[in-house]
Length: 143
Image (cartoon, rainbow, N blue to C red; front, top):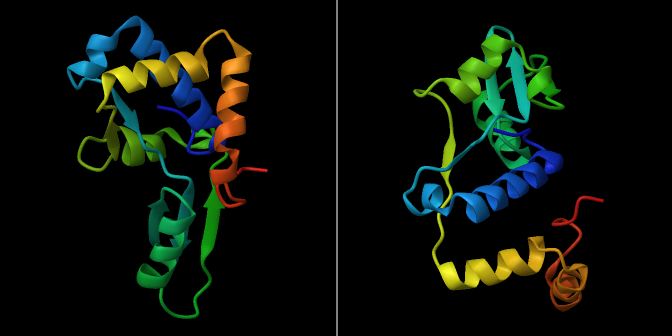
């Protein structure tokens, strides 16, 4: 479980790399999951819903909060900012939480990618960035 922002995604990628390199059987046997905490809390009157990202927030605003009543939207800066009851309700409760199973579809290609991007040779990362930067657009980048 990591924060729902870009920093949390970076930490999750480091954790997945650790498990892949040190305990690959956890992934290969389907035992590694990512918890998906919400990024937003949306409240209108007595109704509160949680959104996992901007797209989900916009969807909830359009479908669940009609009318002209005031809507309060709060953005969580991280898991530590959530009240324990909110964390339990949104991310820990098996009946309500969202989880993603970490899977490897092409083990040989995965090993090569992990070695290239997460290894000790910065020139391999630099080469990857040079070859693939053209595919990134401003919406994909967090700048």
